[in-house]
Length: 574
Ligand code: ARG
Image 1 (cartoon, rainbow, N blue to C red):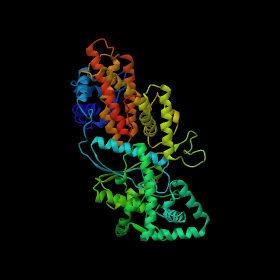
Image 2: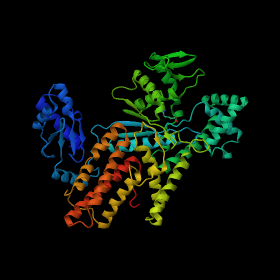
Image 3: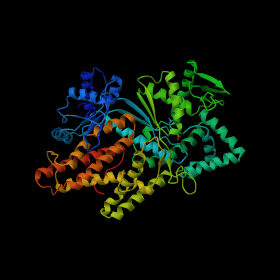
Image 4: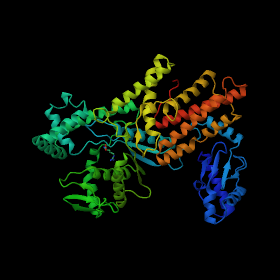
């Protein structure tokens, strides 16, 4: 099984049978193998209906012909045709037991490294300097981090980069405000949001200040040393703040990963020159624009990507064109990934379309916008504090840890010295899991009670299942022996454990952490049923006890690995 995935293996067997029985070529994926309803089988093939239509024959007849040519006897019981033309597969007990023995001995728990690793450059985090990070940036950091972990584990080569917003017109007013306040020594930039808002207020109210600010932007762009040094103070203050949040979150982003907007400044002249040479630009209202074909507004007017503004300054779009060129040309990345909110979907489509026309993107250099929805409060509106300001990330994360400590102390089973670290693992884990477990394209509602619930699809539930599994193994003092699957609960858990490779593969391919979450949740549910129905330490005999211990141990390894791929800690005890 090269893919490590039973479903895909059954798919290639079905594809071979379809060729032999019907003379039709399909891919293993087109065999449409899905997990079956558990009371019926383990896997189900749904391909006969489509093939029947194509061939003009009854689906059940097609399914029967395929089954006749199907050779799966090494891993499954004889397949059965059911319903309108499903083919049902039940894995053989001895095959499952042998597969579990392989997993026990395998560090990667059955997940093979990808056959053709890609070189991925992923843009995530990406907050703006001199502004407080808010919950929107939380999603980028959490989703991006999970995607990085999954891709790396799958065997891809991943480069992280944090596209900090550290350039542009707002810096004129920020620097002027900083000077008015007596420079960075005054400590006024400790509260970044307040600092930004104060500068904004002055800019709007005081024309003299606005004027100075505009001149400052020009000085900054010209590379005036005094201005640059003030700008650096602002950037550094922000970076300290970002680092604090990333550390609290346990997100793998540090200074070496910073590729802020200003990093691309030296390339912008060339980028625009290349666009012009390729004949892609037009001057519109004094600005140099690209109008990628097919993008119009509601009135049918063409939409521009503004690459150079009428004042000669470069903007967001120019920088993003430069990122594509830099990461593909200079850094030889094959996959450019951007974990950025869905409101920017059109911006990225336009940038990618332009990059394709420039040949920066092609069949082997692709770009994917990993978009995500907004974080909503329980009132269904974008999450805000009572004062109306956007919620500060640091406060939010501290609250998560406090609330987790509360939940844990109500259960009161943890020794004193573990309370702090476990509350952190549970609280931060809950915030991350709530974010990751839903389809990322959708908005999600931030609700403390739901995310910290001990039952249901939450990280706490997974962490509990994991801790329970670990504690049985610890109490036994041994990790078990050969697996025998004597009861339905044991078998169901085994079937679930061998599905890890499929879950990792789909999560990596679709940049969809929620698919891994669903898998882990189903695994924890299967474990809970097993735990309830199958006594482990009080098993009827040693052989059964050791088999169950092995299942518990394997479950804890799968859950621990899965949580780690999501960036969530798996404490030993809870
Ligand atoms: N700083 C931007 C924001 O907060 C996000 C940047 C995303 N990355 C990019 N390459 N455009 O909205």
